[in-house]
Image (cartoon, rainbow, N blue to C red; front, side, top):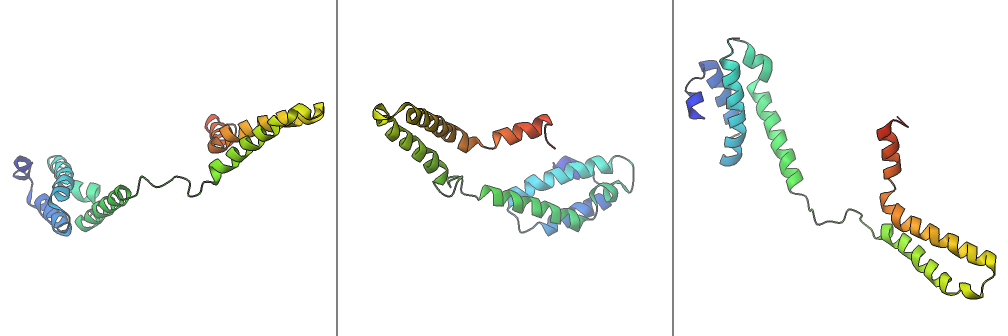
Length: 153
């Protein structure tokens, strides 16, 4: 990148130096990666021939440095999260459907001595248990599909 830095105008070099000074507490590798992008953009704007291009496109150096710092902080915050944590903080999302399946099986074992209407109710409970077991973790699919297809706005 130093070959481009040699060709920056004094205002562009001053802009870059100000940004670099405002980011001096970042690690050297982070600073190098971030400033490389700034250097490329400065070089492109500087060689464009418009004397106000840097101020127009990048704004003030202090503001740009603050935006870069905010982006780095956001990225580090995302990288620091615990990916092993459960998506659901409680086991209720699996216990409710599992309890429905267990109840269905228990009732199914006793259906031989039940009258026909009771056996139909047990079969209905089986269908509900299967629907809960399959549908509860994916309840969001139907509304998402409706929104995506434009059925609802």
